[in-house]
Length: 399
Image 1 (tube, rainbow, N blue to C red):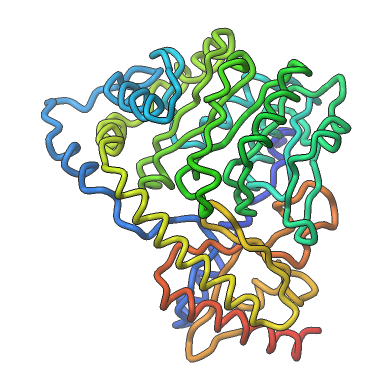
Image 2: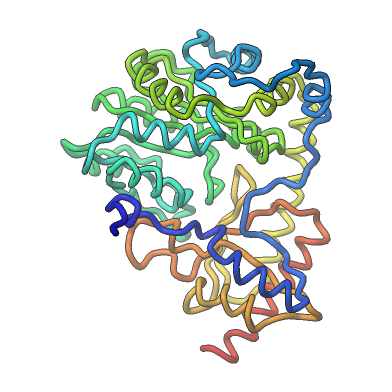
């Protein structure tokens, strides 16, 4: 019995791979402060629940494969407020942003064709590209340069005859890097001039902490319609990760039809989740302002506490709700395992996502971690205290 080559090329998620060890630690009575998964703890808007409660059909039937009209129209109205006009066919509803990315990769990649992605990047990109038989060409960045990648020459050096797409996350996961208007325009031009797809993962769009960035959206450049693919989701924006509702947005008609084939093959996204999600787009702008301000306070606390730990290197993230940090340990993966198996302070320990799987380049990110600041301030402060204590004890015992 054999497993496929593409499946064997994929790696476990660094955000979830330690779950069995976490369960064991909890059985031992430990309290774990979870900084490993980007699961917002802010309340999902009540409009989501009210819409589902008002659902009055006698049967929960299949939804349309491209998505329910009520949700597509809500998304079109949201993008119109951003200055982007969309037709109904430009939006395909997916089971979260993850399926949107997977179906896009399946639709544009052939075996050994390439996608340029700035690293560190969201590790599941590796799974999506490899599932389609593709190859990642990493544009390397690191903490020493603030993870900045918007450099035309560096991007163009990676383009080969096999390149199909450039994939960027804006604002960035895991780095928090945000592209300004000029940088977005440059990357759009590179994609257009080289006849490449430009895949923009914009699920953290509302979480930019410097007003100069505004609300970034590559869709405002109407001269790249045939090249642009926007990945979006209700998960982060509305604190509705469990709803599993996202979308692919593209005006490329040929690509629409290709993705639609995969949408039809998996039948439909969950009906009730789409119904509830349609109401989320009606929330007032104050919801985003309050959410962003809360994450800003959390970001500031985490970065301040990290900078107080000897040997930690960290760059202030300008968007999303993650921070990458370089720790004074030999191996972040080994350190995380030790934290769960061997360490506690008054019964408490902490989890993060080890950094190496966020890189394609071998040997990079070995002592880096991604921290998701998605818990309330007192919990984050305690988590940073545990990290500091854990580093000190680990260095004494293991290094």
